[in-house]
Amino acid sequence: MTKHNIRKLWPAELGLYREHMLRLDQDARRLRFGRAPSDEFIETYADGVNDLKSLVFAYVDDGVVRAAAELRPLGSAPYRQAEAAFSVEQGYRDEGIGTELMARTIQAARNRAITRIYLNCLLENKKMRAIAKKFDAVLRIDHDEVFGELAPATPTCFSIWHEMIEAETGFVTAVLDLQKRLLRAA
Image (tube, rainbow, N blue to C red):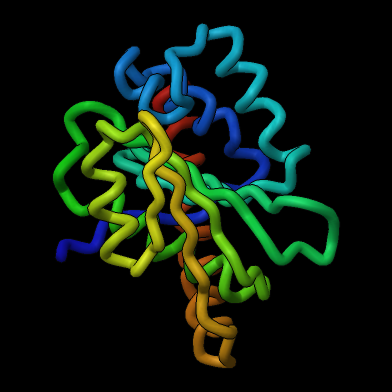
């Protein structure tokens, strides 16, 4: 599998996430939200991601977010359950990006002692179902929706260390991406 430039988005970069969500075509929006929401809904949703304590991991191509995974804690602290949701722009599908985003999301949940990750998608979303199965998700079909559950492993020193290294590398990449965007704007 090709390693893509997938990294955590920092709070100051959540505008890049909003821009990604707004670029999603109607079909991708429907697959992500179960319906095709308006631009206004997406702007409000993306602007509130930080307030929901979500972690966002993204595939960044030349400073532009082209795919993302959101891990949103459920309930109250200490969080033991979370929901994961994914989006990939047209032209970036079928490259293994979704699988890599799922792996990063599970690792993040694991290291935060989240014991259960919930997923749901439309029945027609065969790609998402296939990715979930790769990670041993238990899937249940209810009418035209599929509900999945994953149980991340217990965190280890190595899993935490691995995420720290990825976060540091991602931070450096984020700074370099910001510098590129500023130079282009000048």
